[in-house]
Image (tube, rainbow over all chains, first blue to last red; front, top):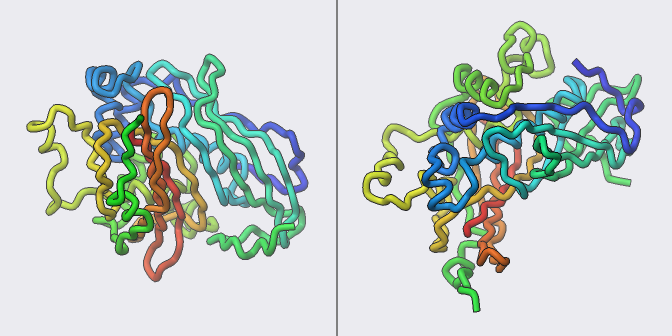
Length: 161
Length: 175
């Protein structure tokens, strides 16, 4: 488990990828079933390609978001806190795709007793096509500083610089 | 000239708020297991009770973005799949299922445009989850593939005593 501190982070740094797949219709079905989502574009090929004019059944956007979240919670570890994440589903993913979640630090600033790190994030398929670009904000402890509070209240960061 | 789907009736829904809706049942260990197995994230905070008890969470928790998915159909609610028998166009996804009024836009295809989340705390196994929703914006874009209507919905998820869990802002695309 990560013991990451704010002082370990540099702007431009790539964080460790999280890789899932290759995705199959069974992976899609397992997620749809777990969340009780019966949207036919995820399991009904005839409906997906005929009615919705899609190239195949779709890997759920609702599933892909959790891969991006895991990318950041794995990196931040149990001492850090994923405060914000936002992303857009711009590209579709289909069975057969191997998906790589990636992140790169774009800003890092001390705030209050903690460090606040901003990252660009995304989810690429095995052809290198980015389909889910976004950004995230992670709060990290400073070396020798207090633990990041849990539950997390954004007010603990004080005003932005 | 493309059709204008943002009618006065649609505009009137911007700012509409739901009441506070309670998820049908509290967070269950088994649904958390199915959830983290489906997202393939085996972090011990979801399943290792001894580890979780001694952690900052104080017990087993659900994945960070679990609360939006915690709202299961109650036994007394109609089965949305009944429509499969009568409407071959039905895509399996009931509209307006966030406690908000449905948006009268007759576009047949729905896509998930993206999310923004702010996290405060993870839902614990056994806790109740509440949801309050609002339509922040509804607007139209006319692209090469035809008109699209984008629905921006904010959802605040809390547990008992209004303890905040997540705020989610979702973009739904009708096209």
